[in-house]
Image (cartoon, rainbow, N blue to C red; front, side):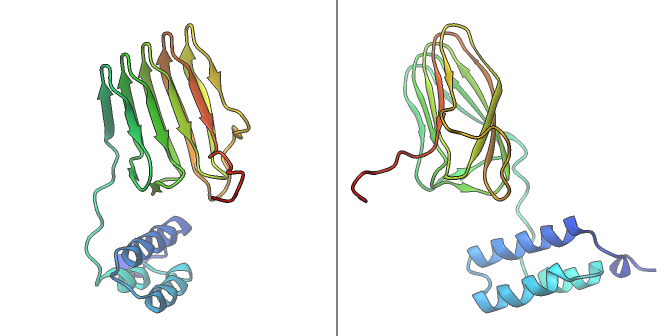
Length: 184
């Protein structure tokens, strides 16, 4: 039996579906092509079935398994708006503050690990609506940690942030976006 005739798993189907969705996002597939191929991908039985759906697409990009490091001695580390979120993020700040706003970010991973190394600065993390976070592995010697209204367990289809690291004198605040009073 050839490898193309071997049966696929649910994970294989999901991986092919993500690749098709990425191709659509890049403008390589039309909405109709995406819908047709997704239906076939989610019902595929063999590797040959899946290969036929993605063979005309470029090879996938390498996985972002490496840690992306953001450093500042006295400045402000800020990421907001439409930014690409790596799977693992390490932020080092000696005297400055850190603001990571995930509410409009492009997050390709269901779980994102953030390691904070803060000395005198504080960090604010804004999750998208429905996002959850676990900060059990974050330690603050003289500061505080606040997860006001943020669930601590993963939610299906939503970002789950795992925060670790330490702060000597700073604080960590993890929250959802603030609601606007007048719809603006």
